[in-house]
Amino acid sequence: MRLDKFLCEMNLGTRSQVKDYVRQGHVTVNGLPEKAAERKIDINHDLVCFQGRLLSYRQYVYYMLNKPIGVVSATRDNHTETVVDLLGTGHRADIFPVGRLDKDTEGFLLLTNDGELAHRLLAPGRHVDKVYQVKVAHPLSSQDVTCLEQGVDIGEETYTLPARVEVVDRDQILLTIQEGRFHQVKRMLQAVDNQVMALKRVSFGGLVLDPGLEPGAYRELTPGEVELLQKAGSKKG
Ligand code: URA
Image (cartoon, protein in one colour):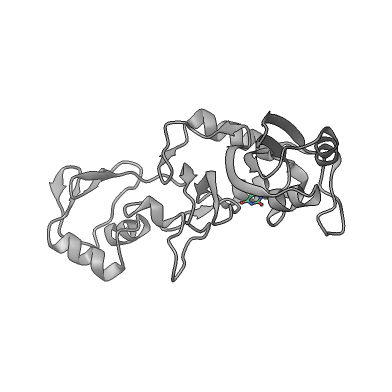
């Protein structure tokens, strides 16, 4: 791959910006300054650094982000900061969020460039678990819990699939769902005459949000975690 193409894919700037960086001596290949942007590199063997930072190229990358409130689940937005903006520069340009969390929802969001895995994790038939910590306006009755667990009418053709509810506190529940309908948790709580006061996704596809990640922080998934997600995405029913 050409060096300038590689630098663009790592999201360091436009083709002409990265050419300037190379010309100005910001880039080394295998420890030596490289001033030829058209130079070919072997992405599997050559070590490319930008301003001393190693740029690692893998076909697929996977990040666990603790999405903060106020940021939108999109790749680009003209007005509001996006979850991909939170990665900063030096990351691949083809990363996107797997599914969406509302602007006022925080918690676990998977970011990747692996379209196939994303598709499988989001497919309705795969029933991938998503666990939400929900702060509710009123305590839930046992009848509310039963309704949510059996499925509720949120104004669509079909009721929601059975869910799991764990009452943690008077105003706090853990809700596990296997679908991802628009505003699903908020609409489920509305269906039992309640209201979501705060919403955080704490687990996705069997992976638990890393407690070390402050809102806005992210880390790469370990190979074992990627494998777990691959398994979650290949489960049927
Ligand atoms: N359900 C919602 O209502 N909002 C989210 O962000 C996620 C699930």
